[in-house]
Image (cartoon, rainbow, N blue to C red):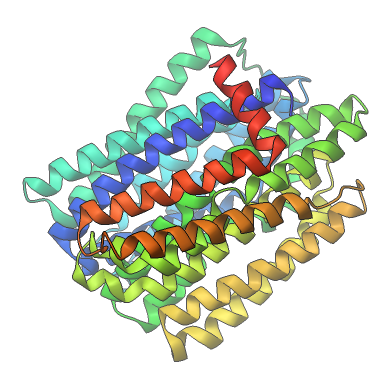
Length: 475
């Protein structure tokens, strides 16, 4: 990876780490104060919002693609805003039309909050984010996201502290999204050549031509994160959903680095394809696959050994999610690989291939969730996501191989697995001395494991060593 791309990824990841720390601390307070059931209700609210994003029909991804191409970006931005405003009005209209069903499903009169949250998330902050990503400023976009999440946690904790409970969670999110939009708009107006102009018919055609294949990508993204929770809302209690959602949130921290790579890889590949630098794309795909598994691989070992101790921090009831946590960290690893391959396929402007991959994932995920959740509950949801994501990775890699011949970094991944196993052995040994029965010992064991893992990788992997030194030199 070139220096500029490496720096963008590093700063994007740094922003994600800040977000994770804020979210971790906030969730601990909220979980201990509210318990699993209210968190389950809030998870269902977010699930409804995320499923409303299907109305986007791929417009966001198409906008990022067209803006990154650097041609008539002012017209593209305006055309996108017109399309997304129309979508927002339609989605909110449908929400109020079926408000009785939605309120019954969630367990309370929350439709108005959902409507405001959807508008803020999709049309306001979403517009700012997609423009930044189109201009290849994913680092700034992630920074704004980190700011929003940090403010959200602060507002939510404050509102819950004074007694607002579930409504406090939603008001806190609305406020943080509004502030993120304002800060992002100020940045765009002051630091970019943003110049929205009246769009032509061809701008709409170009966006829709890409979006029509990307719609299933939107559905896949929501299915990956929210299909299980949406179906669990029918079959299991809000408490079970709350426990599952905390386990999911913990597991997805291991995919943050991979997400940062993916977000930066897509516009980078898009630019390289235009410049006819296919060899560079081949190198980037192999490198990104190596770094994608850097955190999830040791995360699986860590979840097996210390998962119950970590979940205890949220409250005694949350330890029921230990095995679910292990499965979801496996999902994080698969998702990390899947995201890199998708970024390359989309960069080649082959939404038709993405369409095929996504429809396979969606059908598999929906069928498995419907079969497994009624019988196995939240465990069935985790198993369904593991199996459907594994299939998606295999199909995605085969599709990507038809575009660019890249090799999977087997030896590098083998060294990561070796380092993770050694890390696990050291943690088991030291747990005899420092039993993970309290927060301090648990955090010490996690820190020790991370130190051992990265120290071994620093010795075994030249790529890790050189990249670490490069980042340290250029911070």
